[in-house]
Image: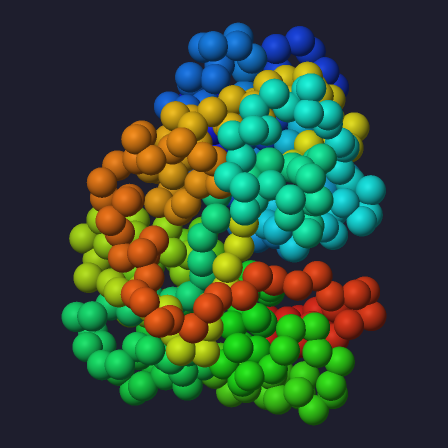
Length: 342
């Protein structure tokens, strides 16, 4: 893809020239924006866009803290991460006069707790995280998170787990009925022990490959984002996405204006561009999630409108958004994750 994916080394070389007129540096999730939309923005504005990618909220935050702040203009963190970044002074703010398309944001996504009144972020896409199963391999009941954490024999050694601390630990907590950000030592020990007991049944950790391993058959089941599951199905994998009885993870990804953005004006132009319904719909048609912008429906593909991944059955257990734990509590969850990844 033209200019879409670059290496970290390339960004180091570009850092000194990043403030040149007509540039925009974007830090973005993998496989999450169509190149045609980037081309459209470049053609309309004359701004050259460079996009670097990451595979988890945690890796994005770590990279920015390790020295990449000041190299990027915008990033696309999830809801809980927007709050963390805001609390740590990593975000700039904009005014309604600058963000002229704020009125296109769907009402439920406008005054959000992680960015009240939308002063530093705009909605990008929202969706869910659960798991999918290859029905050719396992035709049985997939209504429980036990598929991942206590799998049937047919799936043992054939499961991919997201390389995402936040989502793995939330899904594990839902399976055990433990609240997020628990400080109860017995609950945290139970979560740690359950994950370690489940790990031998997993074949791999991978977020950016979570679709490919289902399509290739390298995995028969796996944690996955609902849009990636829809893409795997569209690419021929006989997979079914589950909305398990214990619950699932909900998320809203957001484009944020980064502190000390070298091309702040161009960042504002890009964010306004993405709030145009036709452009927001182009992201949804590519990524297979849901938009946070009103007026996208006429531009959506029928496959997206009617996908089972975006139309959960009635009566499912509601999903939960991630909570941002306080610093002391987060240390316990970091320790659990580090222990799991050893």
